[in-house]
Length: 343
Image (tube, rainbow, N blue to C red; front, top):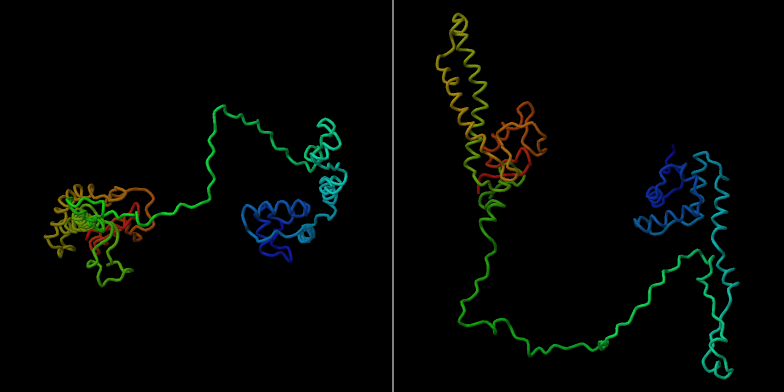
């Protein structure tokens, strides 16, 4: 299907109006009459305020003809619909010419000619004619019942009340001289400011775009996060080192001809692994984010924040620990909020 943007000579406002009114293709534009199209575009422009003015009927007829040309729809498709729409609108001029004219009579003329109220015919209003423009009649409201009590009317006065400046007194004149002076509140709680932003001297001389620039909320227990990152980093490094040391020690014991160069002190790494794992089990499970309260150093299988520290093939936890130890702040892996450990 051919889109309306391929119509030659169509401007941007007309294209935007047609798309807003629901005419995306030339075939749909070719099947509507100019009068109906003008009505749809006017309604869409009143709601969306796309163009300053809606194109006139002649311009819309040119666009419809171009749409029929590129879509292959016959020009005489909607000829009868245009005639029917034009004939469906009543001729207002004919209605006004055929309507009866009522001339109001003054009271003096009625007295001089000795006319009563019953002698004057009742005028027929145009809104009572059934075919008058098809206008919707307003619902007749029920008459308002007057209350039996007296109604007090307010006086309509346009005069403006002037204020006597000599009678205006300041607050200090009403203050009790024996009362202690009111101390104005400080500019804000220093603790709250410190939680939201670091001290000025902490970031003095640092580039705001560098990683050394402290940012984010202050953690409630920064020492726990620091030592938790340290123990987690030692745990992640000790596992491959302990496994390699154990392999080399076993190889030197069974194949001393080829692995006689392996030192015996490598036994320290396999023996220290349970102790480091114990510290990780204690500190790694209690280190959580200040905002989302998720555990920072425990692996979880879920969608991480796009702003989290991540290195391919190393994951999230190891870069988080290194960044925390080096720069004293980090971004939470789960919510992405910057958290700092230094005031």
